[in-house]
Image (cartoon, rainbow, N blue to C red; front, side, top):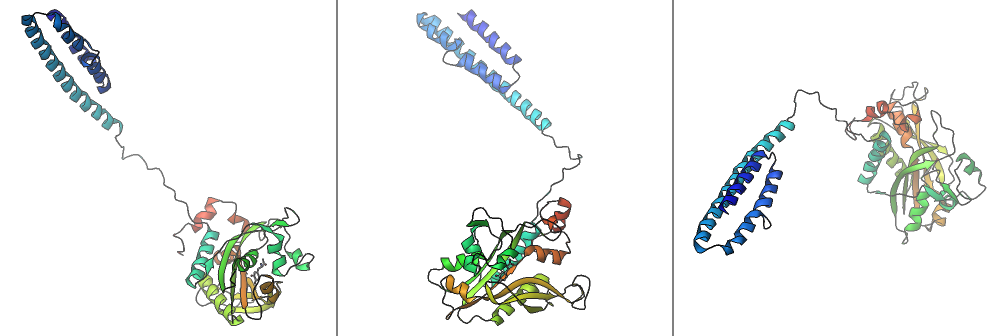
Length: 348
Ligand code: DAH
């Protein structure tokens, strides 16, 4: 049996010399020192030996175990060191290699305009609300004083899905939805940015899908002076402190009176140039005092409440502000175009 121990020792030591990974080394440990291994088997055989033999064999077995453990331990340290070195070697960073360019996305120019307008109106106590893009004819037209057959519907050529459902042609339906949702008929101060759709053929100044920002204020004693003051702040915020606004009479079915708002030309300062076509003024939005029919149809007593509303196109603002001549540039996602706006948001 002592001979067997010797052979076993030799076998294990040889195996230890050959292994090249800590994983293999661990397998040796399990194979020889484990419960089903030869060492355990030998110690179970001791029972058949005489006391003297038992003593000697036991001692030898213990020595063998200690030697094996020591060998396994030194081998383990060796291999760990080797593996660490290999890993460090593999993970070495070659700092002389050229870097890969890190590109960061930017905020789309239309979103930037919407964010600026939102920020302004939120600072004046407005809520930002949303409405559905797939809208009922009821909200898009009827509750805005545009009954079926009204000629003004023709100016907003619509994508109808059924007779009663369409892609909203304007953000104005959110006016009706907001008034309807306000069950206690309390004062309202909201803006609503969003996508709108019209059956236009796309060209440099038309897009079948574009954006609007709707504004609505309803309260007691709201007057045209409130509208004018509010839009003046909007014009100055978007186009510069020195801007002035001018109101011209217009027609929208949902406002009375209706007004078109011009801003003094920010390129020539009002003297007249190619941008303002020599007039000194540039049209920026439509607005007016909420029509009594609209107030009434949406549950507000027009004898008690008045209001103003406006609708502004972020595309138009961005085109004017940044000198963009083709509206399609906003949607075709050419990075050479978009990167021009890729500055810190709101920064100029
Ligand atoms: N919805 C109108 C349009 O698409 C714009 C507009 C004009 C909105 C006057 C308003 C408003 O709220 O009062 O042409």
